[in-house]
Amino acid sequence: MKGNKIVGSLILLAILVISVLPSAAAVGILFDSVKINGDIVADDEIISVERDSDLNIRLRILGLDNVENVRIEALISGFEYELIRDSTASFEVDADEIFTKDLTLHIPANMPNDDFLLRILAYNRDDLTYEQNYNLNIDSKRHDVRILDIIFSPGATLEAGTSLLTTIKTWNAGSKFESGKLTISIPDLAIEQAAFISMEPGQAKVSEELFMRIPKCAEAKEYTAVIEYTSSTVSDRKEKQINVLASDQCPANSQPVEDKTMVSIGTTNQVIQHGETMSYPITLTNAGSEAKQYQIKVADDDWAVSQVSPIGDIFVNPGDSQTVHVTISPLETAVGKNVFTVKILSDGSLLKSVPLAAEIAGKAPKQESKTSTTILALEIVLGIIIVILILIAFTAVARKRRESMDEGYDEQEEIDTSYY
Image (tube, rainbow, N blue to C red):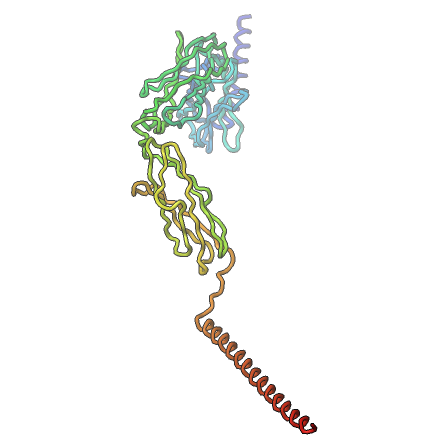
């Protein structure tokens, strides 16, 4: 009876060897040993691995034959979001050669706590696959909290003196309930804000808005914001850069109040015809604390006749405004688009140069030459002389006719008298 059991065991072992060898021989290699994270593992062993960790695999390979283009691949299938895999480059195998190959698989932080199958395959271009499988149990730490995201409002670039609002997304990746403190700080500016947050296992949560004000005289540069989660059992830390810009709210950065002048331009470009006059309104606002005296000058206006109204210096009290009108009347020779410059000065110093433009509609009127004018004058004089000569001629003819009539009348009288 005992002998029968021994024979049966030998037969079963032979079946197992026969079932493995052809598969290994199909690609000409055999996995002599498999190490996972430094430990040799057996085929039926359950390998426990934590989320967000690496699975380091080292294979000791025996060459059974001379084979080309062999590739080793390790993979974990069944994860919802991705296929976890790694593979070697193609290599050649010589018979009776022993060599090692390393593969690394990363277990994602969001992989569920469950059982998976680790597959290790060997194959080449033509032959069947040689495969060994190992059972994996994905586990999580008891206490594991992660900071997933940091959101700044109004953004990572802001002006000194403004408010920075921060929301932080955290995730309890552990297997136990967690309650701890979230903190954001900018050590170089000595500012900090904190809030408390609680999460069930596997829960992700967004914090309330954490409010901080950047000092108005903070130096303009890049700062490091430190975000931390801390509890009695676990902690996590992230860093994020913010860029602070200089602010006029700081007295050291602001322009002296008495030097501030606001210039408002009503229009910078107008269409004008010959014979017309266009006005460009310019409003000066004295935002300082003392009365200011302004001068308005027009340059590059050789194509037009320009004028500033009111004429002379302009006085504006603190907080008041004054509108100046610059008028332009194009010369008859001006055509197309013409640009002129209005210069605004205060106490002899140039505050601002304002380029303005006028587009001349139509063509310049024709100018008569001096010769044409002279000819026209001569023609008029000649016409007057001709008219005078005609009048003289008519007068002479009329006088002659009247004299003839008078002579005839005298002769008639003499004849009549002779009858008496």
